Amino acid sequence: MIVVGGVAFTAVALSWAAVAWQYIANLRDQTAFAVKELEVRDAASRDGRALQPATAPAQPPVPPPGDPWTLDARGLLGLGALAGLAFFIFRGASDALPRPRSNP
Image (cartoon, rainbow, N blue to C red; front, side, top):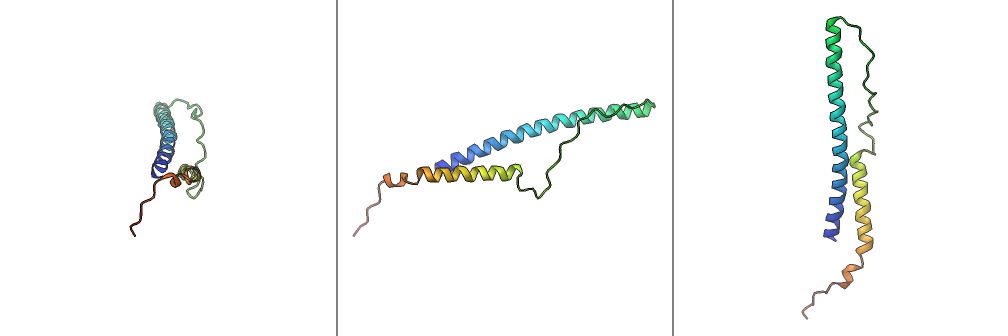
């Protein structure tokens, strides 16, 4: 049961890490683009040139801090679901294990 729980935890942790990695890479790219655009706009304003409207896409809304469906909550919910599934699948497996003999 511990092995199944460890495998389930590892699967959930790896999926969470993959999603977090994609989010971080996207955030890094957006930040680099915003910095580049701000540098160009700053240089244009110092030279007295007319500034075009911003080309950066609008930022997606950030969930409030108390939002129960953050990435961590979904990961824990998935881990609980996998642990429950493992429990119901392997709960009868302990009957096949040899029982220790009691000494009278």
